[in-house]
Length: 282
Image (cartoon, rainbow, N blue to C red; front, side):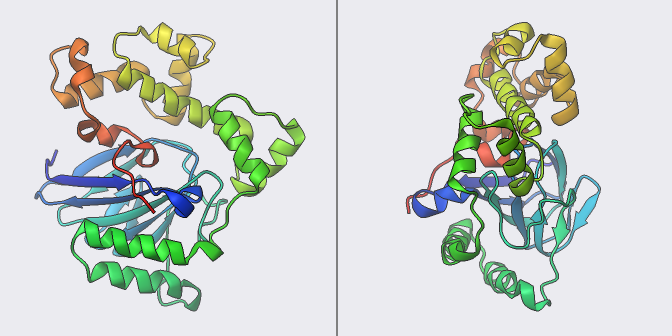
């Protein structure tokens, strides 16, 4: 596996924070490709590919702009040498006009089409720049100028999504089903499962001393078997395998030392959108 991965992620503040959960940058300086696993987060996104073709699961994305579908399962991404990427991750139920929530595969946009002129302009701007700092300024300005066409969810749905994350949702089941289908394309139950798996992976990473049974109980599973089944379906990995991969990747002799493992070392095992890297002040 290549070691030349450079990855930076920023979380907007101010006006953009309602719409955008993260802006990220990745590049490979090695000759060897890097294989990455992106955990599901129930959100959509954009990728600006400024270099070599990348592969998401079985979809090849060449240089250009691609929309990322609603994330319901862990995605495998292959980053080749000389690859340069700029990405935008939307908040739940937020998307740009070209993002179709009914699609389940990444879609590369035709930049020659008139309706995609907005993406063509920012793509060529990013292509002409070389450093993440100037990329950040350009993409931040572009997103700020695009707020009028970004589709935010209704306030009631945004509140419900936040409530689901904190297990305090107060809304009728029928209304919940209708709003989720309209804005996310999945059921509330499906979204809850994605969030619970995401939180479970975070628990496994941050609390290495807990038994798997304790982790299952903490995250609301019926038992350890139920947790294992859900992680296999959504994260495509078992809890034991996930914990083992983190330890192996950090080259730690035992789990007791996992607390010293920093986020920068294990980002390939986390969701792009829920990193703890530096934020941006608006």
